[in-house]
Image (cartoon, rainbow over all chains, first blue to last red; front, top):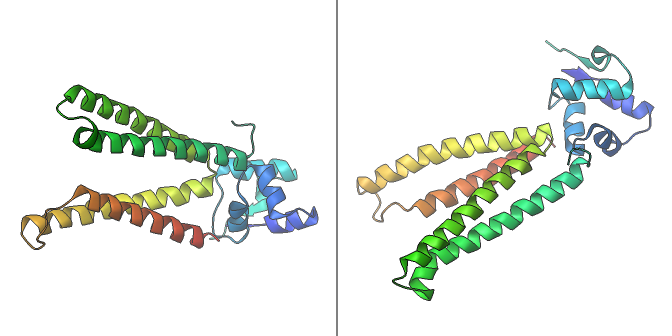
Length: 64
Length: 135
């Protein structure tokens, strides 16, 4: 699954640690999601969508 | 706990797990060596020491469960993978070890402590590999 977390984070000048704190996960988790090594759960994806005030599909895209 | 940030929760649950694990180990040592070195021919004290060890064991188990529940989803995945590898390897190697002992392939009797050490090392190795995988 592709995602735009890194871009959205950079637009707001947030570090991985800032985003991790906002989503209540570890920095390692943010790093793994950004690199596409780990797909977040649906609740975490919705949490990110609420945080960035964007539809979930604008942040996460399925990659067949 | 839910209002606290992950890092603080992790620290608190790790401390709790460490305390109960140390308590369990100390009470295990008392139950094991007490009848041999401190008291003898007093089964009541041995049973009491075993009940105390059981209590610490249950508290350690609950602290470990709480520790896992308060991790984030990636950490839980790493833990789950490591536990699956440990359980599988423990079962396979444990049975093979028993077969080797029963058939006389190894001279010494199979010891449960060897299996516990093997499972501990497997778990640590699987955790390290899991952490590296998601770096």
